[in-house]
Length: 457
Ligand code: IFM
Image 1 (cartoon, protein in one colour):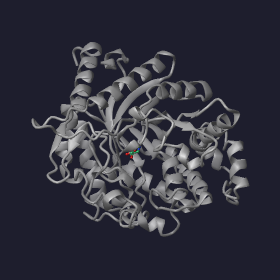
Image 2: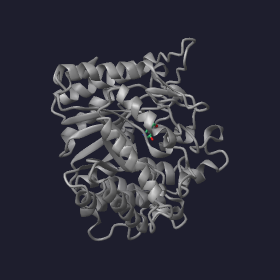
Image 3: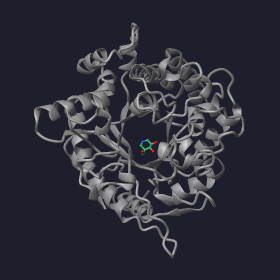
Image 4: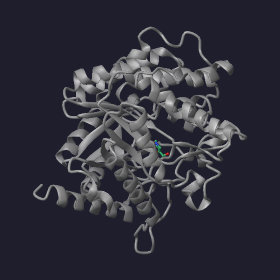
C-alpha cells in the first residue's frame, strides 16, 4: 500500500458530483438543469438513462456519510446543484436547496470529514441556458450571485472550494462536440463558453474569500497529457496542438499568460474566434491567484495527425494496448501519465499546491455469490497511480491530497449507467450499497497511513 509513504499532512478523500448521485431532480423546489433537459433528448444517453434517481443520495445522505466514515475518508469532494439553490439561475433563493447542503456539511463535520465543495459540475439551470447559457457573458455574472448565496451560507464551515469542474468538458464536449449538455456543435460557441467559464471562476474567487474567511480556493481541471503516436513531425505537431486545445487553453490564462497564440490562430483560421470576446480586465480576473489547483487525471491522449482531431482523444485512444483499456474502451490505464503531467506542471507553471481531485477507473465488476465485489483491476489502477503521484511528490511537486473518483457508482453522463467508477457498488433498484474490495483496500491504506503518521489521533 503506497499510502504510508505520503506525508503526514496529506489528505485522503473520494469525490462525487450532484447530478451524478443526488437524484431528487424535481424535489423541494429544485429547478431543471441542462442535464435534466439533455437526458430527455432521444439518443443522447445510453439506454435513455437519466439522473432522476441515480444513487438517491438526496435521501440517503446520512447513510452515505456513514459509509465515508467507515472507509476512513478524511475529506469528501461533492458539488452543489446550482438549480437547487437558484431554480431560475438567479433571483430568489430556494431555502430548501440550501438546507440540504447545510445538513450535509454539518453531517460531514460531525463525522470528522472535511467538505471540499465544487460550485459547478455541469448542471447549469435550464433558465440560464434558455438565454444562451455559457456562451453569454451574463451567465458568468449570474454565477457570482450563486457563489455569493452558497458561500454566505456554508462559508463558515466549508474551507475548501472549487469554482468550476473541468471547464474543457463543459465548453467543448457541451458546445463543440455536442455529446454533453447542452448538445451544441459550434466551435465558436465552445470558445465563448470556455472564456465565460473561466471568467466565472475568476470573478468568484474574491467573493468566496470574502464570505469564507481562511478558505482555500481553487479550480479543477481535466489535464490530458498528449503524446504523438509516432516521432514524425506531423504527429508531434498534432500532439502539441491537442495539448494546446485541451490543457494550455486553460492553464495559460489561469497562470496569467493569456490564451496560447498558436491555438488562437487556429480558431481564427476556422473563423471560430468570437468578436469582442475578451473585454478589458478579463484576463486579469481569470489570472487571480488560487490557493490550490485541482487536477483530474484518468488517461493520456495518443495523437496522430492523419486522423480527425476529435478521434485523437479518449474515449478512443486507439493506439494504446487494448489490454489496458478500461470498461467501454473508454481510456487506457496509463499511470505514468500522472507523473508526466504533474512534473510538467511543476516545470512549466508557477503552481500552487495540487490536489488530485479525481482519479479512478471504470470497471464493472458485480457482486459475486457471496455478495463481494472483487474489483482487483481498480485496486491495481489506484495503487499504480498513487505510486506515480508519490514519485512526482518526491521530485518536488507540491501534492496536498488525493480523491478517488468516485465514492459511488453513479450516472456517467452520456454513458448513463454503463460504466461503474465507484469504490462502493450501488444497486440502482434497491439503493443497496456494497463496498468493493477497492474500498476496503483504500480504507486500510488510510488506516495504515494514519497509524504511521498520527498514532494517537
Ligand atoms: O464522471 C466524470 C466526472 O463527472 C468528471 N470527471 C471524469 C469522470 C469520469 O468520466
